[in-house]
Length: 147
Image: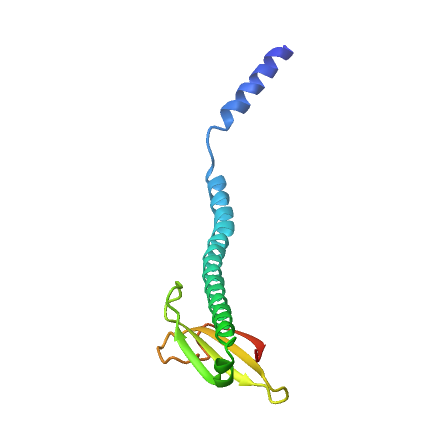
């Protein structure tokens, strides 16, 4: 008698659960919406940040290139002595759209023969050939002495 009873119980438990109930579906949908919507939002923010970091990296590269190119040209004494003001050039071989690099020379008032080189790489979105406050830009600065 005890064997029949166990057999009946096992048949009932397997026949009882054939599919998901409406509550199971509703709970599953709620869990997905609670987790999936913020995850999708984070993915969108992440791609925006990656694009911003890529632009910053490209601008820093251009500022560094402007400084190194300027230092090479200042190895000539005549070029060093005549260096003053600001030079603005377009960036041509970088994927930055509307990219420009500006190099400014500032003579040190205390030490003769010492120049401060300030390189600003910026994305000139309005086309006025000046770095404006709303435009993405990166600034690097170094000093160079007379050869």
